[in-house]
Structures are given as structure tokens and as C-alpha cells.
Length: 331
Figure 1: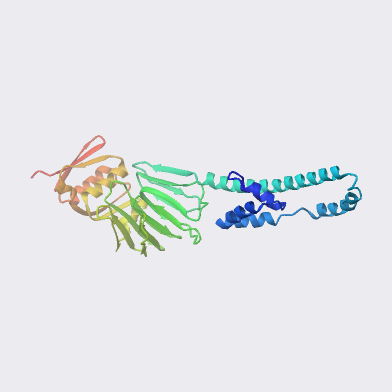
Figure 2: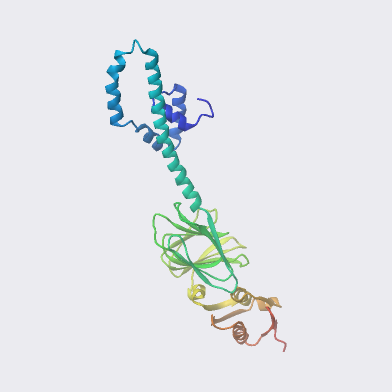
């Protein structure tokens, strides 16, 4: 068989019993290379002409034999036409099947097209994914996912923070990808925080069970409700611990709690929520750990006042249009 001979042509030859030994060897190798190829070849070999066509051929046979000596040329022509008709019918069937597979591949290609949504700073939004799962996006979060989940896994990618409520589907695992860790679930509720400028990636589980693995690694850490896995970007370690979920998931309800959290991390959240820039003028203030809470309907100045009181008046703030400066209080 020539190198450029199409497998469809070879299958047509096999259908009308016109394969060379070389063609047959090539086709055997092709059909044994993949399960889909084997199935396709079995399907083609199961094709045959209808009973009406076969009965008509039987009825024509005596007439052909009676005139064979007088009409050898015509008989040859008839056989040639019958062979061409058979090949044409076979090709029509094969083209129909090929068109189906092409349509199926095209369908998958169209529905594998990625949708990317960016939730702006200062906003919180909820989206429904193609399988009915929901994702609540925190400020400054980008999520991407296909038009439809047509593959074995339901995969989404995020940069930022999102709370997921995943529809249960044991045969199609739901996978959340970040730059550093992947989260694998069947159906559950969990929070993923993976902002580019944060020092950690955090996965906090509310319901169900999830597995968290470092990207491109096989080892997986399983979480149960009330647990968190966090990946330290500096040490490249994934650590599991028990946490108070209110500190990590209440943002989706417009409430923010912080417990012994460095001021720098608190202001990072405020920058995203209110779309402002906050500058802390000393390293000591950046590392100051604070405990407190605020709700969404409080304005930025009210929250800054709460922080000021929580810090025992060791700091003060100055608002300059869309920039805020936090300074050590002069004594």
C-alpha cells in the first residue's frame, strides 16, 4: 500500500474483498493500534447489501449465464458496473459514518472553546457553569471554562478567589486548576483563594470531600469539612490544617472576619473589595496582626476606622482620592 493511501480507501477495498496482502497487513496494524479503530473496522465489515439487492442478483444470474458466450464484453461491463455500484454504495455509507465522526469531533471542538470571565475589583458576582454548578467570584477574580463539559473531567481554571457549589457527578470529576495547585472533587462546596500577589494558595472545604495536589505532582491530600490545605509559594509545601471556615468563606455573604491576620493581608482584601490602592508606610505596620470583622455595607472609611481602633490607635490613615496611606501614629 502506498504511504499516502487513505485508510477509508483501504476499508472500501476490504468491503469488496479486493485487498492485497500488503494492504491487509497495514490495515491489521492500524486496527490493532487503537480500540476505536478496531470498533470502526468491525462496523464496516458488518455492512452488507440489502436482501432485495441480493435477491435481484440471484434472479439475474440465469439470464447472464445464458448469454455469456454472446455477450462477454457486455457481461464484463456489467460486472464492472456492479463493482462500481458496490464501491459507490460502500463509500456512501463510509462517508456518512465519517461525516458523523467529523460532526462529533466538531461538536467537541466547538464546545471545548474556552469562556473567560473577569470579575472586576470592587465587585462580587455569581455564575452558573455548564453542568449547573455555581461559582461565587470574589473581587478581581478571573475564571475560565469550556462552553460545555464534553470531556471526562469538568475542568475550570481560576486566578483570584471563588466559592464553588459543585453538582455531584461521580463519573465526571470536577477539577479546579490554579498556577500552583489543583483541586479534585465529585460534588461538594469549597473555597479556593489563589490571587497572584498572595503568598499562599488556600483551599477550604465546607461540605463533602476534595483532593488537593500540587500542580504536576501525583501525591494528593484529602480534605474533610472544616479543613484547609494551603500551599506556601516560598517553601513550595502543601500543608493541611483545621480552620474556622467563617474566616475563609463568609466573604461570599458580604462578611469579612480576620483572626491574627497581618495588616498587609487585610489591606490586600480591601484593595480588591473597594478597588483602591492602600500604602502601608512601615514594615512593622505591615506585619501587625489584627483580629476583627466588618460587613459589606460598611464603607471603606468606616472599616479603616475599625482597623484604627483595633490597632489600639498605633496607626492612622489618610485618604487621597483613590489612594489611602496608613502611617504609624506619632506620639
